[in-house]
Length: 81
Image 1 (cartoon, rainbow, N blue to C red):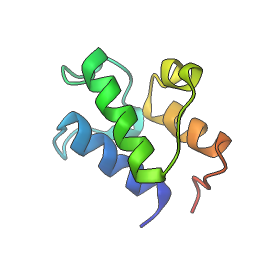
Image 2: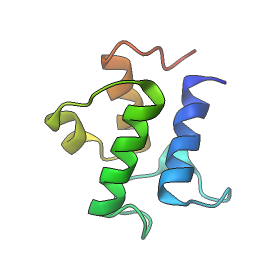
Image 3: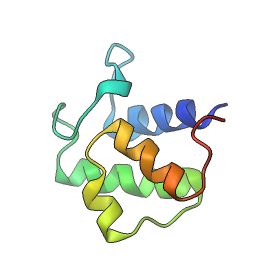
Image 4: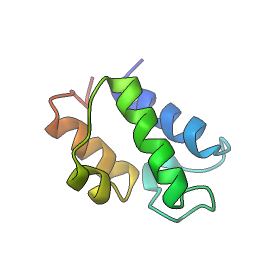
């Protein structure tokens, strides 16, 4: 499974999002579940799925799906794989 698809799955599972929501255009607070608590749940799930530890600034900057991809890329995870 590609990195992008893995991240989509993490977003869907962590935020309990239906298949009808376009994750690629999702931004913080676009959905009821992506509030401050949901954000921390999402961060923990990303860290577990990709075996990384996000820095505080990365946690704060992660305001969208595309930003999450950028952060993973900066951590050396090939987001095109």
